[in-house]
Length: 275
Image 1 (tube, helix red, strand yellow):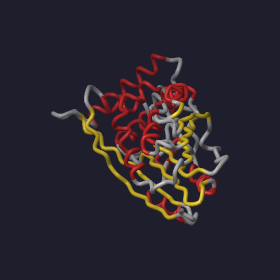
Image 2 (image 1 turned 180 degrees about the horizontal axis):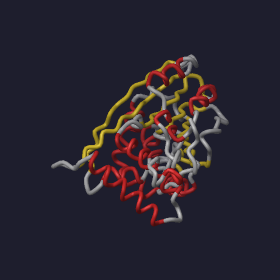
Image 3 (image 1 turned 90 degrees about the vertical axis):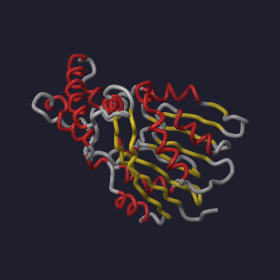
């Protein structure tokens, strides 16, 4: 997979506009993580604005959770929720890290990543080191979007490749092979000797308001485009307006709002020596 270039600049406020829908897959992932030991050590890879990490603290209130991200804007937002957890048993901290090169510096009971690995080309190559960095019986758990063939992403890529935009935006967006199939993730993890649970879910989000799919993408999938056009507000507005029309046709508003199907792939791998 070719690396995304330039590196996407993130807007925590825009990302948070659909925080309720974005949190549901994380809750579903957490629910499938086996019981952890007391006071577990947890790494949250691609922690974003920090509030999703609070869900880990809610599930394991005596945990020492460290969230890792490479966005200064996201980490600044995350810093507002750092500190001791209620009751003083656990803690929540954040640190700068590039997930492409991050490796555990100490044994973790849980290494978790929520909707971040799709931004890391070749992330499967890190699995051996991550599993090796687990404490005996530790867990590697992640979920990634599996919707790169959905109209939302196809339309973005087609527009970037169109004659008007290809010189500036050709190759900026991620491609369908940014993530593996469920079978691909199963094989990669099972080869490490782990007990593996892989599944997929398509969420049918009901989004309110005008152009809600565009609003969703402005917080995530469109970030590389917005970054590439940074400093040229006219071009950014023109691109967004062009995409807006295509998305309205692909996701028409119904009597109850706009339906936005979103497929995600989940994996939970438990290392040997479970306590």
